[in-house]
Length: 193
Image (cartoon, rainbow, N blue to C red):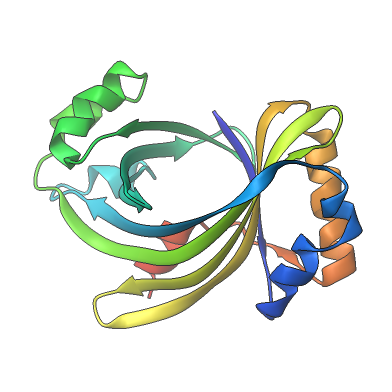
């Protein structure tokens, strides 16, 4: 289960202000990584993925190919998430099921790219005492066919512990930097372009 809070950031310069703020700098426990991300989202010819609100993607994370399935969770910040390192989408599907994803993945037919995203992620691990959280700053674009839209967001993803401190940090960043919750995923926003 993924537990993540996504916040919209505007203007883009605010990402650097947040990263360099004392509230963040004093809780960093691992150095920042910069990872170029290029994501392709998929649909199926029968519409099973969209009917069940599932997301299937293949993402190049630098040189690594990662295939991920996400399903709705039981709250605003949680989702089912399974991922495997694999260069081929069709090879990855049974691997995802073996990792615990819904078995219906292996029954999908006519998988095809629908939209995507290309962005630079700057990620750091934070130690908030009662939990560890990945802070990811994403800047780039969403695309579908010949249309594009911006990505400028901050993600807080719980890695372990109690989520209360993570949610409180999100509230603090919203108050200090004028951020707002972004309830829609990158896939949803790209698919609506």
